[in-house]
Structures are given as structure tokens and as C-alpha cells.
Image 1: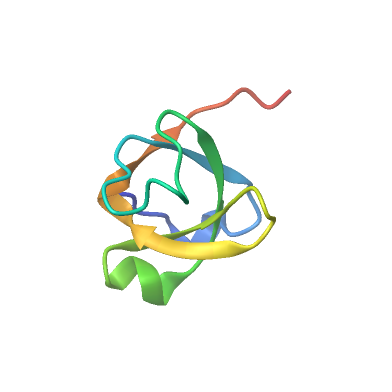
Image 2 (image 1 turned 90 degrees about the vertical axis):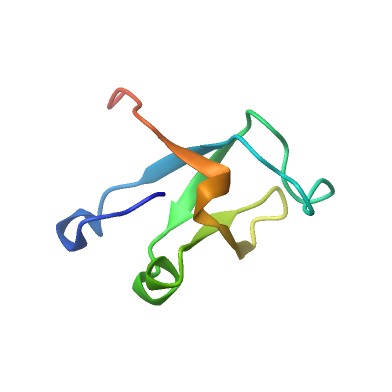
Length: 72
């Protein structure tokens, strides 16, 4: 499950999709997605990510793993 500390609000975060069951038309496996902070969603074990349309949507947090990217 993805969990974010509240002091990371200004940091851009990314996750990789590892499961898209039920969302095959919306989520692409092994694709990198930007995360939008949403503390309420996190309490419900969900994560808000930005899709190809530029809109953000909620998905099960277990469908993603955090991606560690270099600053550059």
C-alpha cells in the first residue's frame, strides 16, 4: 500500500501500475503515473493518480508501487 508523509506535500511523486484488474481501459501496466496528494483517499486505501487525459482519478492503492526517481 502507498502511504505518504504529510511533509512531502510539495514533492512530486510517481508510482508504477502493477495491477489494472477492472481498469484495463484506464490503467496501463508498468506505466508511470503522477500522484496527487489526497489524505482522505489514503485513509480509504486509495490513491489519486493523473491519467493520460491530465485528469486525476482514484484507484486502489495496492495497484501501484512507489517509484524512486533521481531529481534530474
